Image (cartoon, rainbow, N blue to C red; front, top):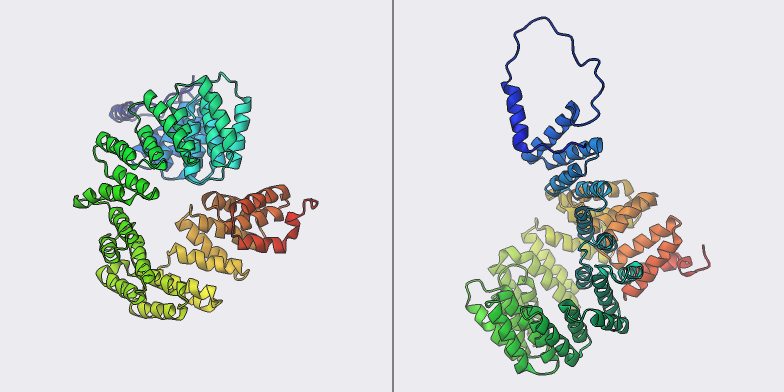
Length: 578
């Protein structure tokens, strides 16, 4: 039978026993009694034991890469799925996603019916933005009767703004082949309905949900989805009906209480909605994040008074969430209380909401005809928060540009940089402004100065390398710069796009394609789409290029690089061109 892993304590005992065994006194060399024995064909031979010992000890020392490679080697030798599973466990601690994916795939090959590798592959696909790959892994798991959680996957895809049509069609195909009595049929149908509704096929989704309600009327998940779809359709009456039905089936599920509050707000019943939100707050023990979410809900329905009532208790806490001040500032601004709003905005500390609060403050002053005060406020904030000076200066530059005062923006940037010449963020901003103005020399000078001070600045490395690649010059240097950026940030979609583009410019579209596919999965914007389409076309994969083009034309309202590509390659639109 295949060998099983020896527990660490047993391994230690074996090693201790070896160390404690007394040696025979020196004498003439003995003839090896196993010299003519056949090789070990079953169980652990010396090489196998050494490999497992090395892997086990490497894991205990924290060398998870070596441990993973050792277990994989042993699994290849003995064909034991347990060894590959242990390799995957070690790889999860290695922070090397490529190694983890290799271990997961090897595990799947050894144990095709196991749920573990399917779950792991689905998770890895999601991490790299490969929604179709993640769905394929979940479908394989569901087909085996496992918990693929397809409805949860559909909700996540919608929330993350994934491109839904291919996911929807894949699910429909899966459903067509799945027997109606399959244990995962209901989950797959719920997921399909969610994607149909989210991609504009609401009638198909509602018809599917109606059929599911006939088959399994007591499923709370079904009624939650029906309530959510009704809310999205602004059908408050249907949403309230579905939420009440779900609440009767799952009285402890707060999502139905929230849906009921949303339905009441859509119907204009603010007092009834407040009753539901009070229930939620009592049940969840005054949870800060819930209070904030409910306040946002009231603001979305133009009900600032209950939103303010929800927010004011938070400012008395020792750990007031910064967004509280941002929301209260917005409420005060909507009521025309400009100075009160400014007080709230300026209480937001450095962090995620800091810049958004100052942006709201200066826009409020600008709209009130107090532009000079807006600039004075930003200058004062730079003094109060020197660590945020770069962000605040960038904000003021943006504000001046919007008013058509670009020369004043340039002067501000020059003045601040003169005092802080090592500010990489502002120097990078000046480089990008120079590039937009056609001043490539200034761009190069600023980016090279950033790199002189910080040779490992991945942003500057990528920007300079991409500039050369896009202009089709100094390509060898461009490749070297981008590869350095890639070594620093291997999963950055912008860097992957640059790496693919420079390989294409160097005449190697085969090498370029995988980088561009990974870039588009992680950053599906029109620029990466244009690069991917062009490379697919250059490789003669015309059907795929046209499919990506159709997706891009549907997805991006503004697409200058794709429009430029079509001017250069009009045959992309000519279906008669093979």
